[in-house]
Length: 498
Picture (cartoon, rainbow, N blue to C red):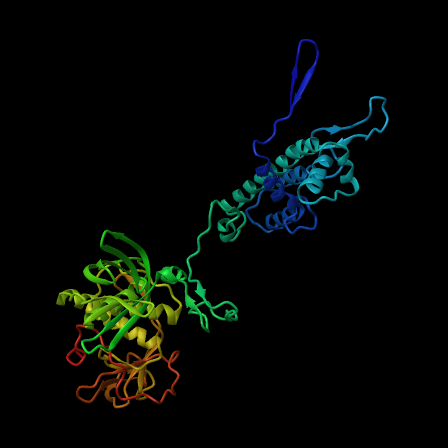
C-alpha cells in the first residue's frame, strides 16, 4: 500500500492490483488447497513430511531444521480466518451505528474466495466479509493469496535445495510431471472411424487395431465423399475387361475452361489424379492425365503403392460417376528399374505396417537404405510375429549341450535388431527342423563334465525353420517340413546361401 499526502493534509491510499483479474483468480485457486485442512497438500502435512525426511537424513544439519521451523511459523501466519496479516477494516454509518467491528484482511480474502470465486455461500466468520464491497474483498485477496503464493515458492526452493544437495531424495518424475499447460491447442494424432447413424459403439477392449463392426477409417477421401457431387469410382481392368481393382474416390477440384474440363480426383487416399478432357456436346475426349503423391503417412503410402502396382497390370483405367464411365485411360508403363523399386518399397511398407499392427510397437522411418540381409530379417520377423513357421537364412554353428543330451532345436532370446536405421523387436525364436540330424562331436570339458558338442545337418536343399512359441498357436511338435517362403522381390530364395 502506498500513501500519497497532499499539502492540505488529505491522504490517498493506493493499493496495487494485478493487471489481469482472471490470472490472479487462477493463482488463488491453485494455492487455496495449501490452506485447506482437508486437502492432502495442506501446508501442515507438507511440513510434517519434510520434518520426517530431515529427521531420517544423516546429512541434515541444525540449520536445515531451523529453516524448516521458520517456514512453519510463516505458514501458520497465513491461515485464513480472523487474524490480521496486513490490515483490518471496519464499517459504520456516520452516526456510528451498524458498525461491523474490525474485519481482518484474511477474513475479507476468504469472503472473496467463497462468495465471489469458487462458491456463492460464504458462511460463518467468512459471511461477515459480505458487509464490504466486492472491490474491498478482492483487494484484500490480492495481498493474502499473493503472500501465500510467494511462501509456496520459498518452500519449493527449500525442498529443491535439500534434494539438489542430497540431503533428501525425491523421485525425479515429481520434478518432470506437468503442472501447467503452456499451449493454445492440444493436438493428438489418431484415426477416426465412421459408421451409419445408430450403429452400436465398438467395444474399446484394445488400444491397437481397428474397431470391430462396420466401422471405416475417416480419411480425406471419405470426408469429401460425404457430398454426393464429389463421389467417383476408379476401376482398373485387364486386356480382357476383367476387373483388377476398384477404389471409391473423391473429386477434389473441378473447373472448366472453354471446352476443356479440369478434374482433380483423390484416389487410394494418397494419389492425386489431374485429368484434362475435351468436352464436345455430350461426349468427352481424354487429353492428359498426371499423377502426384499426397500425404506421407505409412499406411497412405502403402495404399497408393498398391494402386500404382495394380495400374502396371491394367490395360485401362476408368473414372465412373453414378455407374457411368466418364472417361477411360491407358495407364503409362513404368521403367523396369522404377517398377522394381516400387515393389521393394511396397513390401517394406507392408512389413512395417503389419509389424506395428501385430506388436503394437511404433516403428520410425528408415534413415538409410536396407541391406539384403536386413530385408530378409525384416520379413522373417514379420512372419514370426504373425505366428508362422518361416524358413531361416543362416546355418547353426556347433552347439554345446551342458548335460550331453542331444538337442532338438535351439532357442534364441527376444532381441532388437537394426534395419535401415530403425530398431525392430523380435520374439523369442526356436530354430530347428523335423529332419535335422544332430551329430555328436565329442566332449566339451570347458563347459562341464557332461557337456558334449553337437553339429546339425539337414537333407540337401533344405533350410532350417524358425518359429516363435509365444505367437504360434499349433502344438509344439506340429512343425511342417517346409516353412513359409520369404517372397521378397529381387531375392531368389532357392539360390540364396544356406
